Amino acid sequence: MVSRRIFYVVLVGAAVLFQIFFRFYLSTFVLVLILVLPILSLLLSLPGLVGGRLLVLPQNPTAAQGEQAVFQITLHNPSPFPLIRPRARLVWTNQLTGETGRSRVNIGAQETVSLTVTASHCGRLVCRATGVWSCDLLGLFPLPVRQGLEGTVLVLPPRLELEQAEDLTGGQNDGVVLRPRPGGGPGEDYDLREYRPGDPLRSVHWKLSSKLDELVVRETLEPQQAAIVVTYDHFGTPEVLDRTFAQLCALSRWLLEQDRPHHIQWAAPATGVTEDRAVDSETALLACLELAFSTPAPLEGRSILDGALRLPGGPGRVRHFHVTTEGVEGGGR
Image 1 (cartoon, helix red, strand yellow):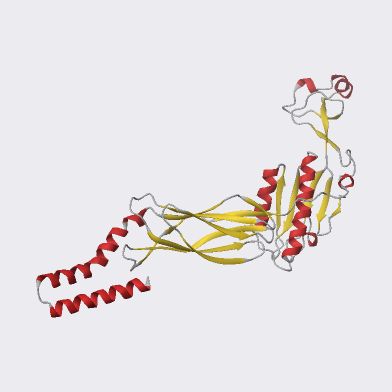
Image 2: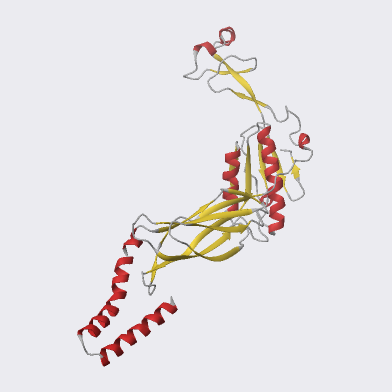
């Protein structure tokens, strides 16, 4: 753009000299034309900016640690007027570890440019444009272009095989309690209690009610397994976090394979406020990881074990597992 401006200044100077030494209508016409050209160039370039915007889209929503995360940079321009020499300044950041980088790209008309970022550590990579420009037809004026949504990629830890997985749940019947079945119904296990308004008459124990001279109801009970809570500490070096999240994902996926929904909890490093997410599927696990990866992890912080755990499950048993870089600890109530 600088070279074009210098060339234009030289061209204006030549036109002025032509006007001075050649005093006819042609020299005046040339000078006026050269002076008006930048304005016409700017006016013809403005319609292309009305609907134009830069889109940053991930090629894949997830990437494995150590692989390449690819962002597709596309200039969307519905106008028939092209954008001249568009270029963008991009910044990518790993929200978990704080790693960041910058890049400049030149985008041709109807062209998609790829930006490749090495996913060195687990986290949520966010790529956004901090500045997008085009220029007029003569290349004299920079013109700003609207920015679209930022692109995000989840960098997941490599899959691990959980060691000694069979010892974690402590047996199939560990923590099983009997609780009232919603809606009642037939069953081998039941409890007796006083009649409450709204109880169906078929649940009344008539023989015992006649002896006690008051209505007694059979309340059907059903076994329920212990709730499972998985915790980890949301601080440490990127290498420590990589190993911790690898162990966390291995445990969570193993529990899902055993049809055991669970809760993943961690404490905010600065405030100690507990975050809790229920995980009952691979989709829920990815949503939990996205939230965790969006929270910056300092080198030091508050441990989830420093405060009282929020254990779901009511009066039933709750099994607690704490994940570290070395593996899984705990398993008791």
